[in-house]
Amino acid sequence: MSVKSVSLKVTPCPSLRVPGATEAPFIPLLERTPIAMVGAERVPPIIGDGVQPSTTSCFGPRGAALMREGGPLWVCDTGHHRLLGWRIAPTEDSLPADWVIGQPDFSSEGRNGKSTISANSVNVPTGICPLGEGMAVADAWNHRVLIWHTLPEDSHVPADIVLGQDDFTSGEANQGDSVASASSFHWPYGVTWANGHLYVCDSDNRRVLIWKDVPHSNNQPADLVLGQARFEENDENAGGEPTSMSMCWPHSVALWGDRVCVADAGNNRIMVWNSLPSSSGMPCDYVLGQTDYNLSDHNQSLYWPRANTLNMPYALAANSQWLIAADTANSRVIAWHVDDLETGCAARALFAQQNFHDKGDNRWLPVGEDTICWPYGMQLLGNTLVLADSGNNRVSLWKLDV
Image 1 (cartoon, rainbow, N blue to C red):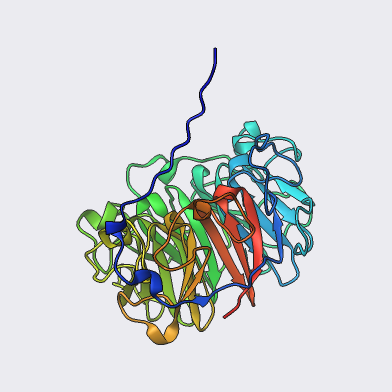
Image 2: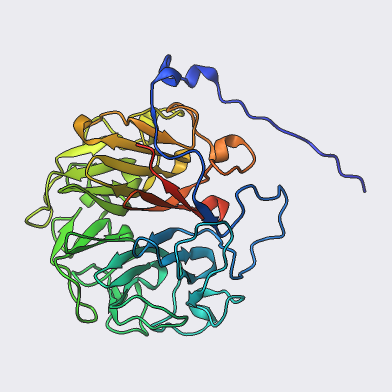
């Protein structure tokens, strides 16, 4: 039987373009070439052999973080259900990992290591961050956050504390209850430690939980909740239309100076509070990606993005001047300058697309060193941006160019 090859080229209707949008000026956000890449090659072969677990491979990594300048680097190798650790921050491509947590060896994969839930197993690990002298991991499909009080420096090191469950062998959403609580999770996807506070994006409970110090006991309840009026509520957009308080699929938190920023991915926006809210359920002061609090359409109801639109932003990072967003479904990274902050304002800086009006996984081209496909996680440490390029099965390290 003969097989006929058919090539299709899809060209979106030019009439969907906003006149002049391609000419909007932008600042290059990152340097032209990355410092290093791990998990996959800069320019991989067009046809690969699949993604088998090894010391050098990743499968859909959704989180990565340098724990200190110079390392170690820890990566949530999400599709392989494991954490990979590099003792020193990579400065060249395809370096093998030194440590693995979540699997018995580097060649194994499977949820919870194809065994029972434990203090060193993971099921769709997604978010990761340094926390005090240790680190925290959002173990999303075990509905928990794992905390190590000191950084692991070996394979198979068990966590010291678990949040979201009574013990290390439990893994039900909201601890098996029909309602949420101050100590339960349903798919926690993002973790951030900043200014002495732990922030957890409890995504399917449509809220962000905040601890005002390093948690010191299993199942410790949070101190504050954003996105819901009370800990016991978990409706999408608090049961109504989007508002300045409600959330739909929060995924990441970053502190932009004193400002608390939440990637409210399901509402295609970023919520910004001028300072840490003093009580639960407080409304935000600004939104980015939408022109009003009650709007939620991706790219503001247009096919093509612009400098002031978002499409499922999953990750945030910031320093005192710049707020950086992984605009995931537009396969780009954009950044706002603090001087421009107001609801609906336009970003200034761009990475991975030719202009603010373009979108497309890898710019609809073969994978290159400066293309990305569904960037899912991000961290900024000093002048180094760590980017989990999930759709390309790799993690890249970059220097800011702003």
